[in-house]
Amino acid sequence: MSKVGYARVSTAEQSLDIQIQKLKDAGCIKTFADTSTGSHTNRKGLKELMEYLRAGDTLVITRIDRIARSVLDLQQLVHHLKEQRIHLTALEQPISTDSASGKAFLDMLAVFSEFELNIRRERQLEGIAAAKAAGKYKGRKPLSHEIKQRVEALSSENFNISSIARTLNISRNSVYKILKI
Image (cartoon, rainbow, N blue to C red; front, side, top):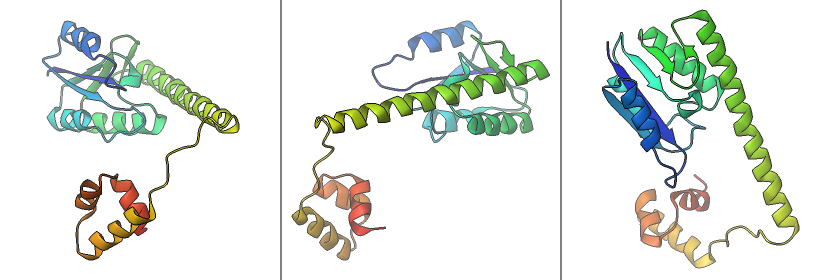
């Protein structure tokens, strides 16, 4: 029955130090961390954490938005933790999955966290639309016809997506788009 911590920041410019110190002060024997957006659950530190946790452990976070930003992701995580008999506690919010009121408060916080994320996205899209209207946002330059031909040639020579991207110094997504995979 150990306390295990999880910390997350969205960007490399942000620091994990404060969260990690709070988790240590709360008695966490081990802490996992990610520098990644919270809008998805495909994070290395989170995966390692889930593999590490055992029945009877308590997962400690500083705030609920550090582990999930959508209601669905949070509910799936809580359901998984409950199946594994692992408790979830947040230091800065009065939540704990071992009581009905704690679970209710957890769900409310998840709703507000997802709402905040959606509002931020809407503002970002509004800003992009305004910049485009003002002629300040033109997006990325399209790839040249030559690059597209080289992608197709390398693909026909059975190069994999990653090696094509590396060779031509373009993203894997660009390779996929060109090849329409």
